[in-house]
Image (cartoon, rainbow, N blue to C red):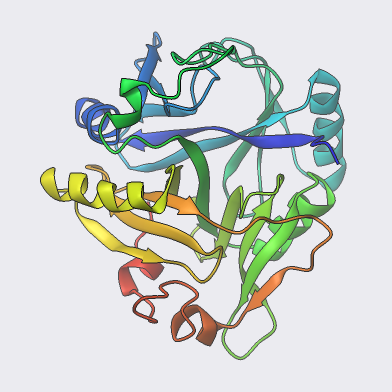
Length: 311
């Protein structure tokens, strides 16, 4: 079945405490390509295999975290339909004019029950990549610049009301639930991995008392070997690592979690399950998340920083 409705994660705007430090980290160490700067000072970047103008936007602010997460939808008709559906579900929406983000069309933004700003858009300038669109070259120097992720992949968000978030994403936005974790001694879903494609996940949520928190931004690597290469580059640049290299039981992806200079956690990630909307979701217990290797297959334990540090 062809993808319709919400197609994929499109962009994320990250708050950094020092823009120059942030650019050095995301452009020079992580290896994203800078594609523009706007009149408000925001910096636009993307991975070497991305063909839209940008996927990451950096904004200097007095606190770290995420401003918004945007999803690309199929077309303008889909954008209008989903806007009406979100309103019918009970949320207020805001139309943000084309050009507010560089090379991006009109966006529909709304605050979901976890306190996060989510937006949908149908148009972003397709700028291609330096390997070409016809008989593309297999190699570009950008593939070896810094850590060199292929693309922005997903984000994990912390906040309250994840049951309502689940209803919104599955019954209104057309996502399917791929995996979940139940809270201790209950059948309550406290963590969700949600897909609009057949990737392991496109966005994830964990219940948390404070609304609107960012746990991590994830960047997809071409192979697990490239994740290990990322570990060497992190060490050479004194980047503080939270977890890894290891493998998750949940999603089965290879991973390293580390922090940018502002304290935002980022992930270098590869592999993972293939999911389909007709498959029942994989269920994990709280014990399975820890001792069962759901979080960390190698060490089979929970990590305090991973559970508590958010921006």
